[in-house]
Image 1 (tube, helix red, strand yellow):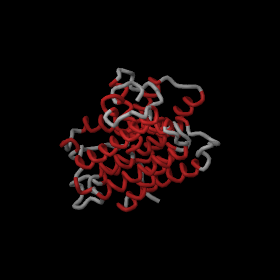
Image 2 (cartoon, rainbow, N blue to C red):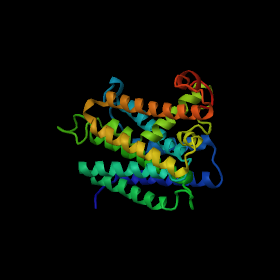
Image 3 (cartoon, rainbow, N blue to C red):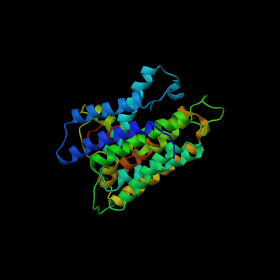
Image 4 (cartoon, rainbow, N blue to C red):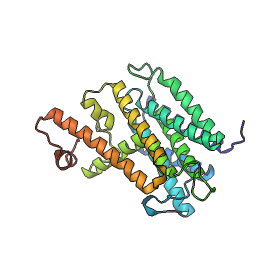
Amino acid sequence: MVNYKQANFLLTSCIILFALGLKDDLYGVRPSTKFLLQIVVSIILVVAGDFRLTSFYGVFFLWDVNIIGASLFSIAVIIFVNNAFNLIDGVDGLAGTLGVLATLSFGVFFAIAGAYSYAFIAFAMFGSVLGFLMFNYSPAKIFMGDTGALIIGLVAGVLAIKFIELNKIGSKPNPYFNSAPSIAVAVLMVPIFDSLRIFFIRILHRKPPFKGDRNHVHHRLQRLGFSANKIVLTLTLFGICMIFLAVALQDIGNFSLISLLITICVLFNMVITYLIGKKDNSSYRLIDVVFKDTFRSGN
């Protein structure tokens, strides 16, 4: 229906990641090999497919960057989002539901902007993951594994980049969405913030940032007694609220909006930490969240 040759590079990248994920699920793959192939896939998308961010859009008061800097940053973004979805896949239905939320949101945004080639990709992924989820909610009959999580993360990252570029300030008189980077971050807020928090905690305690543990947000909700389906519902509703908030406040600017979104996530995390502490110790205080648990390993 559309002449969209860039889709060939996305399809090629998906095939490579599918093969990588399948081998990892069946036999295991060394982390260095997985990371190397993710770099290769990202280079294919950024260099050959031109899926590239060309500006920081005022985030941290930075704007246009040269092509080398933009390419390196775009490669890092794709790898990060790719791994963020892989890391959040720890509860039945969670990664799939967040993938459905992300692809549906981007699909609607692209349709509103008249970018139908991207909308088709988003809705195709939305439909396929939705069908998979029918068998993935607890108690799950089938599991996603790295094969599915890597593909969802890759497509979500690429759609985020194209959504931001489509609404670049100055590219047209009136962008369809203001503060597009903030809206894209909001769409992917749950896996993004969870990964950033995990990396920060591991580095703070001098642990390898890519070493697995049970400190993700879904693990912490499990400690509060949440079932798998309640965890999925809670984090999905939180993600929906982030998206609606970002769209509603899109006129305040990227720096302010992203700062607000991160602040809300930090407060949400503090509430979880406080409830866990209160459950384990009735004398636990709110101040302990900062001065005790934040700097104590395993919290």
